[in-house]
Length: 288
Image (cartoon, rainbow, N blue to C red; front, top):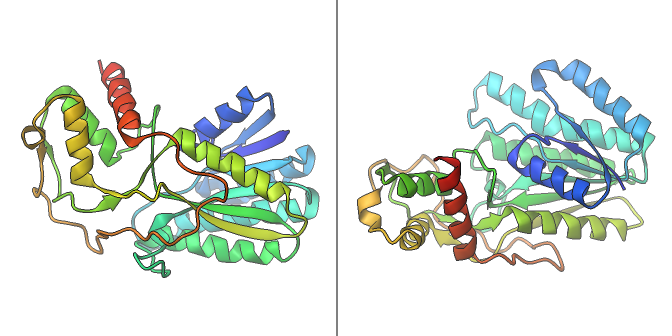
């Protein structure tokens, strides 16, 4: 297949890129920059027109957590306009191409109602609304709503990475109370969900925007994650993680919704304890 991956330098995109290269596909990458939008949108449309890919995976996004005017501008360009450019180019230059992009669990509250946690989540909902327009014109697309992803090569400031580094380095990690639920999905399982979604899209004859959650359905509190990781290192969790040091964030969500439909035919295969053990060992070696 001819595949185009945007955001191939990030955690998600780099794993997707390597996966499809290893399968023998012809994979092209593109890095979008919101601060160069005018040139970038022309480039990506021209790229799609020239290579006519079979599949486009948009793995890049602005994760700006602010909501000031500059942040909103960046979020709208990266998370809403870019998927729109891609969908328009598919419609006009590569009508047989499939398109997979990513949403977020933060778009919804614990009752599965649209209630974005922040402006980032709101931009993901806006992108889905825009893509619905192109679905009516025959473009076959899917939005995979990711929960918390983790795995090797992850340099993001994520809570599991912070806990792993603290326990590997025998340092104290100050945290909030840790009563929030998260649903950790290993990057290998995320890629399996992408593969399954690609198959589902290929079976569709009409335009569509499939919306699926990529989740294990086994949410767990952050403080329980810390306990599991302390047992892996045979440590006393209370001596490594200082729960309750920080207050909870505004709009903190303690319970995840469990009502969103998962990708049909897919389920998370990697056990949490195994994934965390591998993560801790990988980060121990990385930080030597």
